[in-house]
Amino acid sequence: MKYMNTRDFRNTPGRAWDMSKEDDIVLTANGKPVALLVGVDESNVEETAQLLRNVRAQMALHRLRAQAQKASTANMSEEEINQEIANVRRQRAK
Image (cartoon, rainbow, N blue to C red):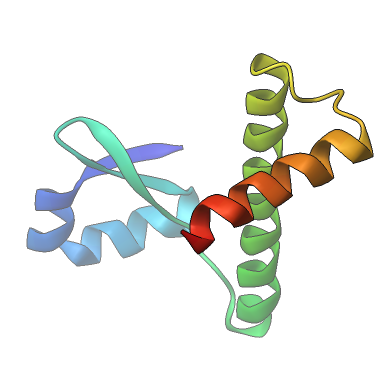
């Protein structure tokens, strides 16, 4: 995986295209990753995009499960979950 800052990407986008043929590129801003540039073949653009969306969803689910584990809510019963939902709905209605 290669890294390129957003300023270089803006000033020399052709270099990024050349680099993406060899490897994926992490775009950075202020030294922090902000985007991933992945080379694709025109025959599999949709499949690649769908795979990336699936991975994003799996990562979000993993984060939610980790938060539930940390907050000790991972082992709530169905009754406790329904009570929590009812409480939140009551608060929103106010």
